Image 1: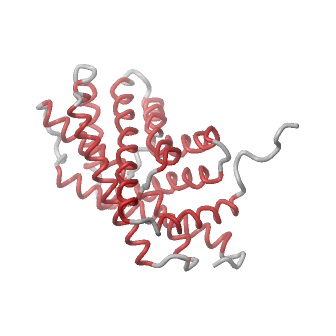
Image 2: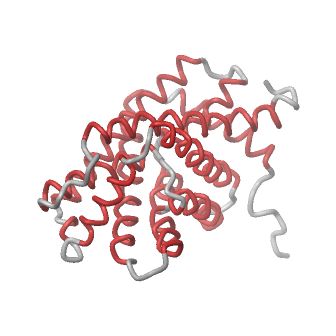
Image 3: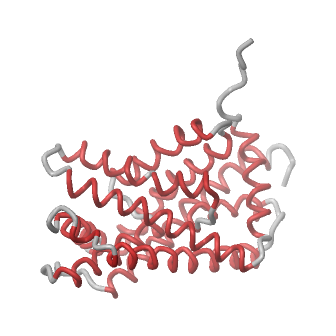
Length: 272
């Protein structure tokens, strides 16, 4: 007889599973947390490299189709994080759920967020340095570098308020991908639920702080390596400001998802 069980668990079961997972994550030893965080920064960076490559080679496609293709390519990063195992700051904003349940304390949450954010940054920067060292910026007779520079310049041209709002929307979608993947029954099911929300946030041009940890340095280093003209507003200072505001937006978006599902499922059931 064929297995009639659903491919994904019901939302209330996912809420309990996410809570348990976040409690475990918050208790990880610092060394393991940092190591897994560096891997996540690198894994998301691989998604960034693929996204830039597709963007460089899809110039003849209509705008919407190009962005969707770029988004599908970028989804590789979150697939690697969730299936291979790594600690991603933006996904860990869901720790607001066990925080609301009083299963972890504010100190544990801030420790996890801080260590993983820094580790994600280190992993992303190391990957970008390797990519430049490997000469990826020269691919397509410089088309890769142009794509990376233009993408970075677009991100640094936004106002602080726009980046925060964009960061909220981005991490709502990312955390929904993490949420659904937690309830998926197989690797194929997990990939199937990860790709659409991730492709959507990238296609919409939303701001994901960990993705930007690779995309912004990639653009800046590609510009320095090729001697291409530096677009107005693109600088290391502007990149740092983007990370600040996108991180804030990501916390609000992902943390809000965690609190929403706590209020809907776990608080109602008396599990807080």
